[in-house]
Image 1 (tube, rainbow over the protein chains, first blue to last red):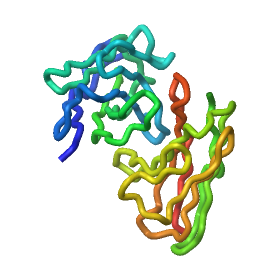
Image 2 (cartoon, each protein chain N blue to C red; image 1 turned 90 degrees about the horizontal axis):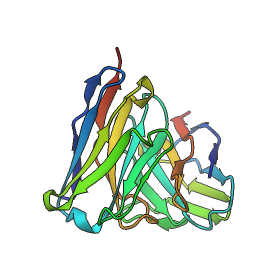
Image 3 (cartoon, each protein chain N blue to C red; image 1 turned 135 degrees about the horizontal axis):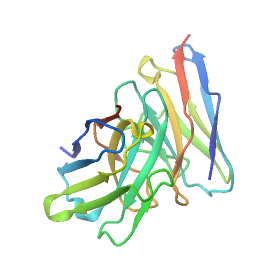
Image 4 (cartoon, rainbow over the protein chains, first blue to last red; image 1 turned 30 degrees about the vertical axis):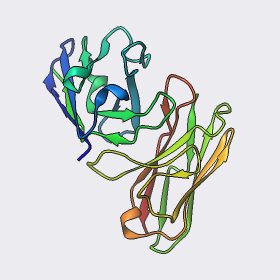
Length: 119
Length: 106
């Protein structure tokens, strides 16, 4: 079965850090463009960051630039999101998604991992 | 590129035909995607390239439009269609989503 499974979410204090992971199964991650998308409680979807298949290019939303770093390890079929200097506005469910390219829509989404930033 | 959706919420009955609109702040050709999301679940890809139905999606869903104005139409609502619908543009970074349209049972 083709799937993405996120982990690493949890409760963290403002200013803290978390590292999210996303493991792919049923397909080879290295051929896909990967993304992180988040959703604050009761709110809409927000794109966070994207990385090309060979890690040549990375893109981030203005809201996370300088604080979040997307990376991947194709040998481990894994995607990561290092999140630093977290604020309460970063609270939400974080989804990893795959796409055939940066101009193709994500067709597979993980189940999401919850990040809660609170003092 | 900003996306707006209308209406923000909609009440309809099983069997109704409904149309949701997505408008882009500048032209995006046909680079418009539609997702369906149910509570507590990840979004599901419905339509891409404005009008191409994703494999496995029922034919009662259809999409149209190009440039700045797009539509998602459900020809005959089924009980499982009550959900929130989002549009998304992939023409340029930052990737953006519309605010969503909540489709509720009347």
